[in-house]
Length: 264
Image (tube, rainbow, N blue to C red):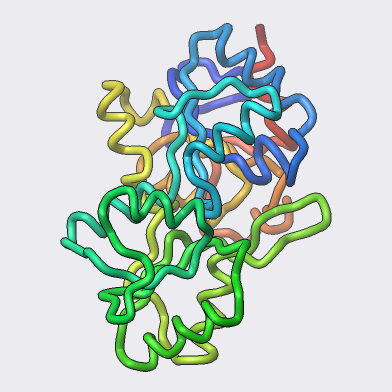
């Protein structure tokens, strides 16, 4: 970005907000998150909740957000699963084998794609918090038989108050170790399409938008690919030390969202 950005967020019309590690950790909001969202609303800055975490469906995300006191509607939640579904439907895929949660299964089957096929076109890997050895073994057999692997997102860990937990990227490494197969496609952030379609719908230029997140290789990488401002928060995965050796250059680095939009 050529234009400077500071904590006031002056000039920003839409904020794309990561969830895990940015607005909440596990089942608790990051300190100051609700106040930050209230400040966005008072300023008229539209906000969208953007997550690579494919373990929940949109309705499950809304239930969690509402339970934390966050007001949100269905069209404000953008998931890596949406990016995956867009790609699957564009490829005409009708049968897959899913390593994912029931929430993810419902979203995929909701567009008419079978998820338990014995002759799948793809093995689909999500952030499966309900994983079983049977799923891993069945998926591995399909991969050994030449079925390609597609992942919903690349995140290695999911932040939690107790440290990072194995995410989709960790399972990718497991499958590569067991079968030698790596994904033919990885959806979700940092693919710029996750937000470009929404920016176009809103009629906003990149300089009017900001991506707020805790990961350099997904959140900040997507910000750079799409041309929007990247705001890195240090409340989740990334540390100040990580920034020094990163390929990404955030527009702004703050401790947490509590420091943002606080000028009014």
